[in-house]
Image (cartoon, rainbow, N blue to C red; front, side):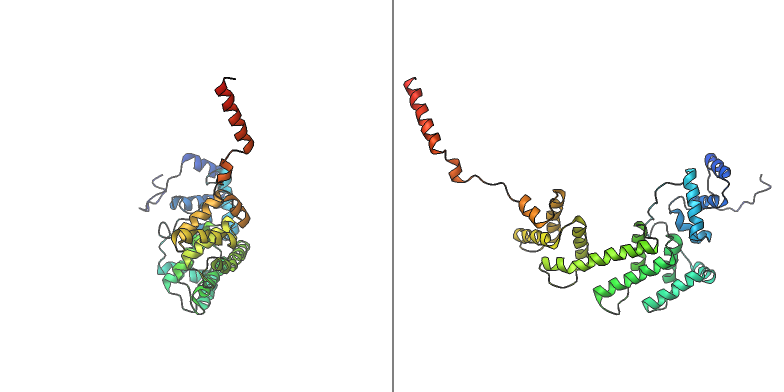
Length: 309
């Protein structure tokens, strides 16, 4: 066998005998190649993220992934990709140039993003796009929707003409990948719900007595989480009032604690909170005084006992 193989000197990958048997019995070359690519990455990336490395279209890699699942060689659930700093390939200038040269779709995406951001992308900028399409496996049309979303979000918060950095776009891309947003339909549904939630934010800000200003990123996280828990602005206003009475100012964490307790108790609407959050009723002084007939009975009982009746 030594006379047939050429030793490359690279770090090897190991296939179990059972895995080799299943691959040979299946006879699916694409599945075998995808399995080798996954082993090379030590299983730290989702199979679909290797489409760029293997130079396959989406249908081809999905078919190979399905074959591996059928053979029991990859997990049934889609694994979340690692954070950007962990296992992402370090794309160099040559990688970027090679992809721009051979992929018309990637060139078109780069041109569209440059127009949207109003600047010429640097090699590291293009490497971010390469990571989103090659490493995460997001289609080019989804990546463009992602960029548009990031631009609109920054302009809404900071004013016209402002643009997001590529790191912001990359971070949002990882969030989309974790949520499984990898088609135009999924992106459109996410953006519809996002716009709906954003449209409600002014009502929550007014309920908190903060006027019409746009919430800061940290404030926005609280407001969106309260929306997701099912609290309307009116209930948030009650929690805010209780917070100010206790802390003499709006403390977001304290207000969040109140709302979390109500959420755990199943209290969300204003009526539910007012009915369920009342303190235990105290017995009034009059209620502690026995009724007149009870006093008469007790007096009669004592008199009879004293007389030995």
